[in-house]
Image 1: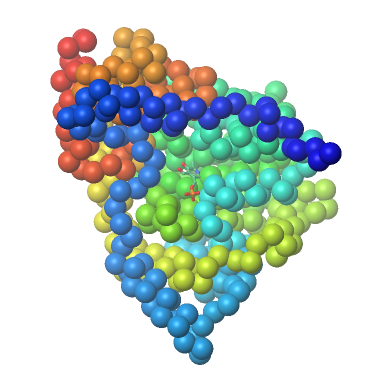
Image 2: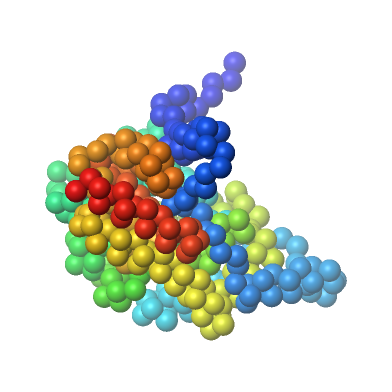
Amino acid sequence: MLIPNMYYADLKDSYLFYHIAQKTNAYLKNHPDKHLYRMGIGDVSLPLCDAVIRALHEAVDDQANKSTFHGYMPECGASFLRETIADYYASKGVTVSADEVFVSSGASDELGDLLDLFDRKNTALVIEPAYPAYVDANVMAGRKMIHVSSGIENGFLPMPDDRLKAEILYICSPNNPTGAVFDKQKLQAWVDFANKNGSVILFDAAYEAFIEDETLPHSIFSLKGAKTCAIEICSLSKTAGFTGTRLGYTVIPKELVRNGMNLNEMWVRNRTTKTNGVSYIIQKGAAAVFTPEGQKQIKDNIQIYKNNARVLMEALDSIGIWYCGGKNAPYIWMKCPNHMGSWEFFDWLLEEIQVVGTPGEGFGACGEGYFRFSTFGSPEDTKEAARRLVALLKTTK
Ligand code: PLP
């Protein structure tokens, strides 16, 4: 009889978004006339920018003609896109070569697939609160995990500690869900820790485009020694509205070697075995993101989300609520008032002001007592949600 991967039985129910949907649906059933202000969504609300749409249309037309038609694409990515992305890194002062850039169908896919590079006997370290996929992908692989808690005392940016024994280190900066961003000095400490211990950092930079404080690192490769200990995973999902179009990229430096094995070469072997490349049309659309026109247009869209963040931050400031994030990330992580639990706060906001956010407890036990707002909603809804939040929270002071 076939034996399935029994580690799936160790997965905890991913109840967070299911539970939120259940509660909001039940509320709407009882109050069909009410509008909900959805500040919980991690999905974008603005469409693809014009430069991308034009490139996508042109690429579709290319596929209609024998002379411009493309069949299978190179497994690791089209060279036009790999080179464009390497140039984008250069514009940020980071040198990576095109063959260190791998085009993917998105960061989620890649975060799961990359685990193929590591032995199951390794231990993975996850800083919590965390994006839930890190934990589940390792549970599925039967890997031991260390959960490092973070909190207000360290600004949700914990530092490495020699007692932590793990070979795979997840770092997400700007962070989902807390919006906290590692500065160069703190991130350097993790890089040095990884090099000292022979670990590998999986650096999730899905939100790098939201950094506005230019002293903060967009890429881990702007730090000394990162090329011998890090893999960077990026995505156009939030940067350029590609959540439904799907494109990401990953940088694996050629200097990254463990136990005599070169991880860049291993990944080439993995991709050439397990994929047949990302669609030509989508890669053409993605390349348009990096043109001057595309960069201007995506920045205009990001600015709309940033204005939402500003509206929410001003609201929380006006009533003296502690939060982090928002300035360099599309998430705001607030402390629930009056020692409320995060689900209790969720229910209260839904019932009283029809504002829906995400309870922090869903991102790990240390998220209890906190609440995440996403800034990807519409400006109108965000303004009204902020107004309602202030009016409600004022009554509790
Ligand atoms: N990493 C983080 C931290 C995210 O928040 C998300 C999506 O919300 C992803 C990765 C997945 O991105 P993608 O849409 O490219 O799969």
